[in-house]
Structure formats: structure tokens, C-alpha cells
Image (tube, rainbow, N blue to C red; front, side, top):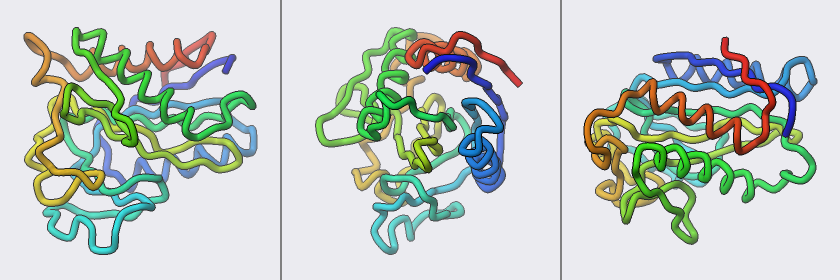
Length: 211
């Protein structure tokens, strides 16, 4: 990918508002009215259900539950978590959704590596892991080769929020957060900046424009 990447750092948002913005930008990108976008946000507490979520999944959740278009199963979004939504027109050589997921995992692995933490993939599972604990969940969708939805990286997330359902079909105890693996304090803004840098590097953007 070349050209510019427009970054929108939204701060704290309600999930429905960020979802509506994604839909608006998705249509504009499909129609060629805007360039590639990366939304970075931190949601009010919510559980989202992907296309593979079993009926009744997350029925024990104590926060709002929303069905969405992305792949994957149930996950939690809330304070202390950085959520990234790339709205990107995939170039012809990248039009493989498995490759897209691996690329996003690579961005997160490099980012947490910048904080001295070794991330890894697990065969047969989507996401990023630290040892045997999952620190980042991914779920994406695509329309006319424009991506939307994305990744959720736990930085300071209250992990108790995962305990009322099976995140991504897994035992809730498997979830972890970056702050528990870093010596000293880790600031959300610092992690956001490294994510942005690593994303731009991986996809070869010549210019990053922040709104």
C-alpha cells in the first residue's frame, strides 16, 4: 500500500457511534471519495458478537451485547483497551483475508515488542498471545476489498469483564493485558503511538495525517 493514511484518534466512544462512523467511512472508501483510514478508540463497556458466535453466547454478560458483522465470536470492549478499525482498500497482492489477519497480528506483535514484551501467534487461533495468555483479539469484515472492524488490544483492561462469557470461545482466564507484563507504567497514548507507527510501517504508507 502507498499514499497516505488518515488517522482518527477518537478517544472514548460508545460502540454504536464508532460503528456508525465505520459504516459511513466504509461507503466513502468503497466509492473512492476518501483514502485509507485508521480509527483508534477506547469504548464504553460492551460485548460484541461476531458472525461465528453461538446463539445465546454472552447471555451472562452484565453490559450491553451487540451483534455485528465481523468474523469471530464474542469479545469485550471497554476502558483500558485500544481498539483499531482500519478502513483500507486492499491492494491486489493483499486480497487474502487470512493474510490481512496475520498482518494485523504482526502489527500488534511488533507494538508490544516495543515495550519489551514478546507476543506470538497460536496455530488455529486468531489473535496475539503472551505466553499462554491472549492479549489481543481480532475480528474483521470486508466489502469490495475494503476492510472494516479490526483489533482490540488489552492495555489496562479490567479482565473481570471477560468472566461472564467465553471470549472468542475460550476460557475467560486465558485473557491478559499488556500492563501485567511490562516493568513500570505503560501509558495508553504511548501504546497508541507505537501501534500507529507499526501499522504505517507494515503497510508502507508514505504519509500519516492525523485528524
